[in-house]
Length: 370
Image (cartoon, rainbow, N blue to C red):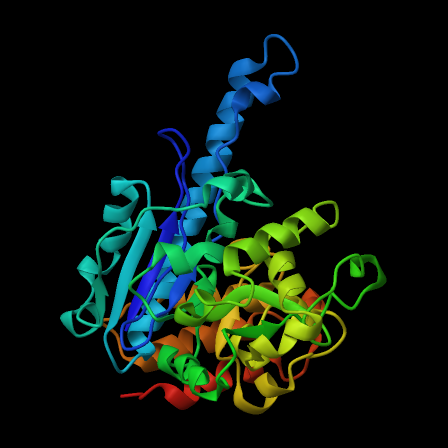
């Protein structure tokens, strides 16, 4: 299995991290990318140039640190839970970033280090006519739209944001490709909120509640033969809805896979993209997660590194503290302890009486505890 991590650079100073691919299948892990701001735009008052510049540098460094913490946990979760070998291809314009990411597993026990193989660095690519969307919403998040060209020798990939954690084996997610019919080009997870709100009706969306672009199963071979052309379809979508698109690639994909083209996308179970708003907006909105446990936890909106959803952050911190040289049972103990410390008064997901079970059920089932 293999993986891909795209990182974009602007001039010589960009900090971005993104994707991962598996070989027997192909997966891609993308991380929220940080756009390096032009500090001169912040210089609104004479005399505060250095202060503003230092603030920007501090913010960028902090964000880069957050991204690397998340990537380390993501890779750790994949290595612990997989029973095969995962090959990663890195998409970045920075050799330094490539080296930093590929060195993450160097200190791991050989048993887990052997499960990750890193391929050659891949260059970031945008079609010339669409280079302007590189900084739409957040820097390089739209890169996932052009994976058929970035990976011309790859048949299928799974793209997941790097602020995600596998709670069940990655290869179980790949099995969803087997459920595609002979026309479907993508597997998508339901958003479960937002797109059914009146203020989001400016654009059409996939299914009943839209799709979230943090997890995408892409048959790249079929996308290269997409009806009307994949890149031309993206161009037409942007031209038609340019004043309504707010969430860049996610909105674009929702529009493309709405209406008569909805059958071209297969809906993957919501347990493979469990996010804070799935459990914090009055109830658990993903019945599959209650029945089977969360399969992939998505820490969007900085949930893993900020304290806006303590239950989800507790899961991330347990993974971060866990040492692969220890028994898998130690991971479960760390997670149980962290979750137990977050009581109902924290609000959000903590108000659900069964949230700890929802978060841990799948992990418990798949870990062999020595």
